[in-house]
Image (cartoon, rainbow, N blue to C red; front, side, top):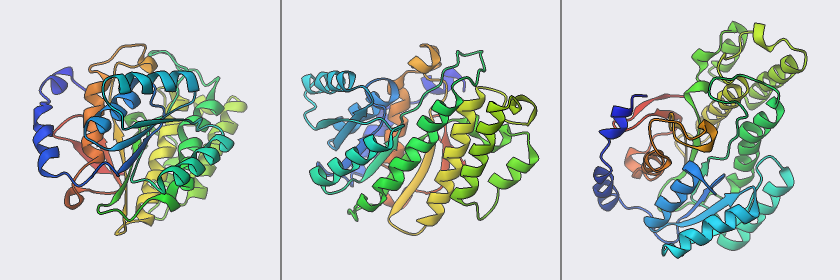
Length: 300
């Protein structure tokens, strides 16, 4: 993504969009994972500024509490914190129970939590299992667990998965894997099968010659699986009261990129929030959004 695209993106245009298409209220609940820093924290802040009730989650309780306290010091009292480690089923179960007890349900889920152990120009798969568990299995289990709690609110409930263009199907060179993931009636079991194949290839040292993505391979496969799952979920609820989309924020200045990038977390969050808050009559499902306005979007 060229930095000039970010420079030309006028945030003021979003203000008028929000003002003229406000479908939410203070009772609208948005959950954001991995939100004690970076894009996640910026998304929480923007939601809160716009008047939603926001749940900031983070794996490390102390950091999550500090981030929440800082936002409250800025006058954003509509932010709540709850510790959540998406890589642990027990943590997800506890969190889902808390959401149901505290709010009765939710309206928006932003799956932002993610990890990578590679530097910008490295490609190690030493921590492949952790990356897959955090970036794919965790968000999938959390989403599946929260599905019964999405409310029949005045608008369509929304899931926005923060993904990556590295997880695009064209990054896969193995024709068999590509054919599986491009099936019209792709199943969750088939996605799990592809992920299992990758982890087995890593364990046996076969992954480099089997046609998997060549850049940040484990991260790319995790996002490839997340995109595929998003497509399956979107089809399941197509025409219903739940929208499922993915957004690639591009080369953002976060800890994952060691502070390098063409734009700030605030810039990426502004786009993510605008997508999550699209008015019902403009809200798609099963789409992959890339870049800054005007959005480059395609079907998942």
